[in-house]
Length: 142
Image 1 (tube, rainbow, N blue to C red):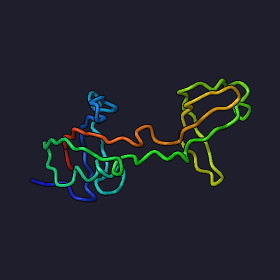
Image 2: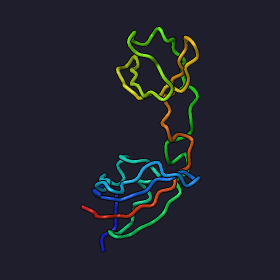
Image 3: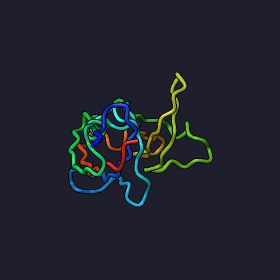
């Protein structure tokens, strides 16, 4: 039977959990996740986990921080004055926004704190700093 190798287009079902058992994402009730194995389209640990699997195989993998979304980077936490926000916007904790840099790159940020006239924005991935556990089922190799 065929095994996954780099360059194969694969379909997988998965459940992503934190080490405390809470589920942060799942393909349950949705179409399988499709990606090309070994091309960096998913986090490194997930990519490596599907290698050599065969259709129908199931496994649970523990993915350490370094092979998931990396460690939190405090340089990606910034304070901005409320006055820099559009006049019709009231910044609130938990709001997700898009920011741009001088090179024209756009990236997501989350408001984590509002203190008077200052707002704290965090550009770290929400799962940065977390070890992850995935239950993976290889549906097909195309």
